[in-house]
Image (tube, rainbow, N blue to C red; front, top):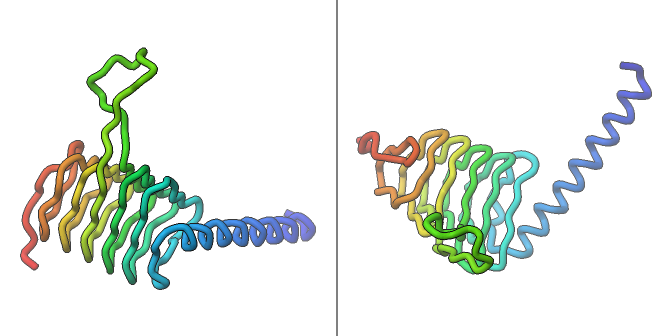
Length: 165
């Protein structure tokens, strides 16, 4: 790669980084996000007319999405949320006729208590609470509440074991 191409690549990367930073600043203005919260990577999306409330010293990885559709997503302090995690507070109800233009939907708040670790590629369904100091293994679908001090994983996520500490 010649010098001119490298120069333009650096300029383009700086522009992309600044654009991403402006988007994240907009999320901080729209939602209640502690100043120590970290957007840990690119292409993180928060959206919806509900509330997103995030505590101190928490981070979320790149390519993750939080949807707060007329509901609340509350994430505690000290949480570690990996990349490509999806949290949705609304979804269509599966057991219905999708040719009907008036589809029924399920809504529910999502609560992630303090010191939770969520692995990569996790999907969290509406109405779920994940208890304090719990771990959700990578590639899991969390459709039911997770007890504090437990490790869950799978599709759907199930108890693997209780934590000793």
